Amino acid sequence: MGAGAKGGGAKGDGGDVFTPAQRSAVMRAVKSSDTKPEIALRKALFALGYRYRLNVRTLPGKPDLVFPRHGAVIFVHGCFWHGHDCKRGRRVPKTNRAYWVDKIARNKARDEKARNALTALGWRVLTVWECELKTLDPASLKIRREED
Image 1 (cartoon, one colour):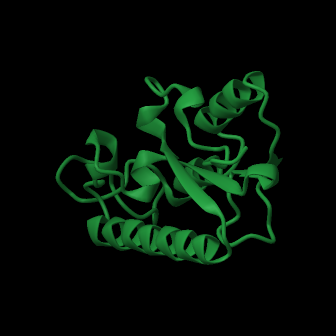
Image 2 (cartoon, helix red, strand yellow):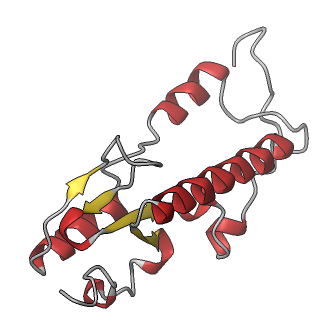
């Protein structure tokens, strides 16, 4: 670590293990779309015959999958980033704890706002969590309208 870099990375000092430039590169690599969980779900749903649109910007929250014919949208949420009630979702980083607690709370509030707006527009909103994908049967998702 160069002189003047923030954080020491030594255990117990509360510093980051990366330099600011390294941390920036790590965070830049975090994807918001085309994630492995999202792609796995898309492939499974496509194999079941579903056709969908991706990341429709004109809809609140820019849902990951949009099924216009069925009036349904799916958000594929990472457990950590969206504060799921599972082992990974409950984990809070030890460094900069207050920032992360606030960040996850903002994400959850944004998710709820998008869900409410979509529901008000007549969309059925489904959320699939990253941790559920290992055991989820995509055919069990209630994508089709009852009358379809």
